[in-house]
Figure 1 (cartoon, rainbow, N blue to C red):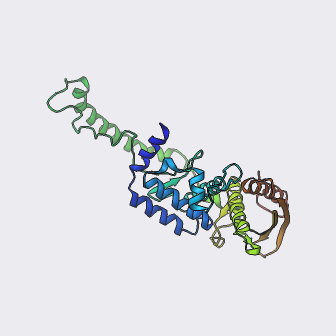
Figure 2: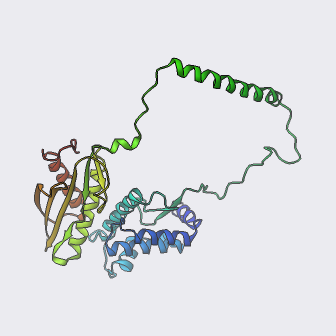
Figure 3: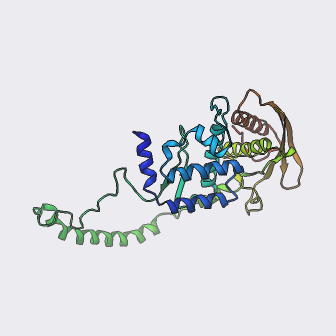
Amino acid sequence: MAPEERGDSQARHDPEGVRAQLDRILASPEFLAPERGRRFLQYIVEETLEGHGDQLKAFAIAQAVFGRDASFDAQNDPVVRIEAGRIRRALERYYLVCGSGDPIQITIPKGGYAPHFSSDEGSTPGGAATPPNRQGHVPGHERPLRYRDLLLPIGIPALFGAIAVLALIRPIESYLSPQKTPAAPAASTLMGKTRMVVEPFAALGGTARAADFAKGLVDQLIAKLMKVDSLVVLAPGRSGMETTGSLFNLQGSTVVEGTVLHLHVRLVNGADGAVVWANQYERELRDQTILDVEDEIAAQIIMEISSSRKLSGAGPLP
């Protein structure tokens, strides 16, 4: 069955290596997740390493991580599903921004809560592959002589002779052919693009719900802005990098009063500090999930920014 295969796959990884990778992620400033999201990630990783990955259900997680009681109903309280989606996005952003060289990649496949651990080292579901015999045949069984074996002593000297002839022809060709302008390095494609810094949104009122929404909305904005070819999305604090092009800072603040969300967003020109665009949004959270509200508002913000003529240098945004 699929759950058993997944459990076997996770068991083949070194637990200490996975725990070291988890500590690396939690200590990174690029892993944008609230405290309860970090507890969620630690819990599901530890449970999987202990061999309990097939028991990671919403009911057990809600009680162990979020303090829910025995009356918890996942249909009426989607806290586990929402937090899992937020941690999936936070992990994707971490590996995209700064974790591409890490030895182990931790992901949470959709459709469940058991994490998956992968690395650059090759592995097969059935176990380690047997290395091929250096001689290419079973010891004690000599293979028959082939025509290829007779051609090798002739073919290798012929190959070196052809290389020597080409080495003589190439300098002559360089005199007869016009010199081509060397292609610009790939890094130059970033020159002149509009740079965008999505700063962490301020959560006013001191409520955990406002703080969670602010972090989730920033993740949604970064994910959508990175799909725009004419933009370079920078991590907070990296706006001083040496490159040409316009620089804009996207800032905002959130506050939740009861079930009503109030959001203020502004776009600031990094060159002179002028506010080039600003807007405010209000949403009723009673009949919507936080993820749906984050996605809808992020799409609306990008659409309104794209219509601003003051955003010079950036092409149309999706």
